Length: 320
Image (cartoon, rainbow, N blue to C red):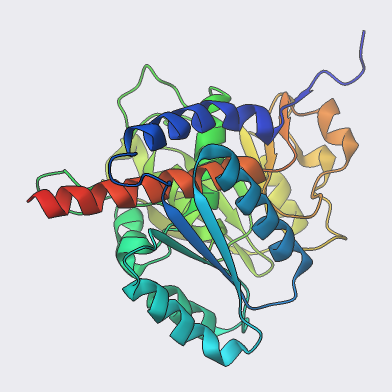
């Protein structure tokens, strides 16, 4: 009998369902996009992880019937103009930027330069506002679905695949009774993920180097959107306490040296890592029932799914 009861589940096996769904949808769009929708990626940094992500994105696009164009911007200051040109280009269906570029508030500004109608990553302020307020549509008639940021959405889809979401409960409440820890509170992934999980009914402990916050919709899910409570400064003891009865632990620490302490993991918990670095060591499988070491292929599937939704939204708007 194995001394490691847990199973490792690869993102590639989880993404298969979405790959099939996306490929079928592209076929159904041949009348409006005979050569497939065009995604343009902008690379203006020397980050090897961004280069790897760009290569993955290109290969995945081509294998599924999309067109992909990587535009390398040697001079960062020209990136804004290049994005604006792509916004205006009617042949471009989706735009993404490989961040970080400047690594400061200028990156947040660049996220908003990307046209909302072409923002496949779901970083536009309208999408973020909807996500934080638990609003799932862009219009009152509920015809145009809002877009969610792709890495947080990928983690949600992974949790659905792993049956952490309870399908017997109403949609929007399917994490009721679950407790989750998210170790990362970046504006791109960690905070949105904590909000999404809390909006779906979970109690979420959001952890960063400074403090630990609790995201929840209140006792008995009495609020329509999550509320945030500060639990105090970060300490190992407070983290251990939060993990003691947590069903899910998600890590995204962007450091090659960080390892989540295996002894903090409750027996049978689900562990997911979205960092490009390995945040758990191999002993995680002695405690976790299910372990997903990376989310990359599911993230790309969500990005392409977002792009098809944007194309559909534009089609619906043209018909109104």
